[in-house]
Length: 465
Image 1: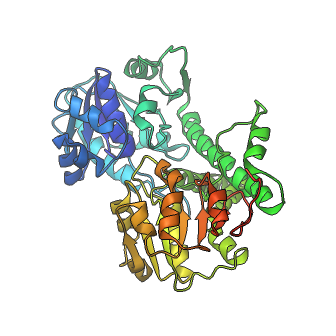
Image 2: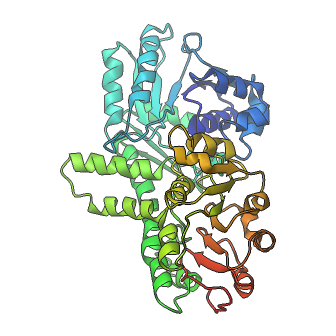
Image 3: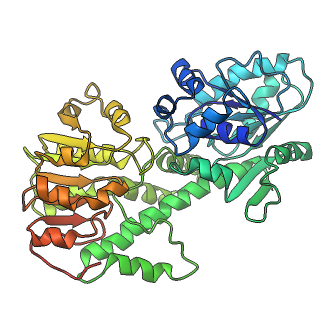
């Protein structure tokens, strides 16, 4: 089938690339000429400057010019198209609502082309963007107003975790399709023939509104798990002696009714979806007169979690950040990505500087450029105190204390570097519980403060897990 993918960001690029592996003729369209030039080059380093996903550059390099094409104008490719996927950003507006300006700007370009196409075949316009419930209806009305004929609308939300997007596109746990007409369901089944009737994949056909709601409820429930464990499980282990976080987690999740997902406590969840989607859902339900207390609590717990270790360091360790140099390890919102959108590390950086830190020594294996753009000193003069380093050891050198904010595996083996570059009783703030041999550091006089654990003084040996 011939597919157009509008928007070549994380979702659109991954969807276009993997779809091209399954025999479809895929045309990905974007308005950024530099991004398109990078993708057309098929060079890994150029592609990964924009979207850094394991395996994605390899797929693009293999399929470019064969079944995968990149364009900035759809006029010459609109005819003969079977489906158009909309993969456009829907950021949070000032009041938490989803900002659909990018979405409808793109539609304003596409609709006249669809109205003027010479090919009379039916085309399905499919939302992969996360959009408020009812947006598919707005899309339908918009296209009719522009004189588009013989089209269907559908919602097909994406559920791609960053760092695993290619693997999960090839082997999803579910495919959700919302449409009104049987012929549109049949068309999308052909698009997803490798997943339809698959023994291990839930292929769900429903209404467009239900499909839109499924995405919001899924992301909100995942953030609820995270906020529950951070706001309840971690607090218990931080507050009461001899409550061991890892044992607590194993004991609770041994109940098959309770998910293990989200039980890994941390200094908060980031990324492009969770915060944005729960704010949008609060706005949608609140505008309809529904109570949103639970959703608002989940959101605020997660936002507080991003910086609460700084406050714990002040209150429990009596630590004064004034004039200190802090090594900040991890800038991406999670490992295996260069995405810093809504990253906890951005909040940590600002919080440490506002607490009086003289300088931050920052390091991340992938996200240095992206973080330096997000922490632009022209937006906040405090960010001029941040220095970016090429390794964790280099960031530790000359620092007074350490804050670990992202769960990169390389940070698990930091004890040697900590001993070489930091002097006891330096404080280690572990936002991801990444130091398995913290006891050795305590013996040497370091102080340790981790999510889900009480503050531990140097030379204080415990049997905590």
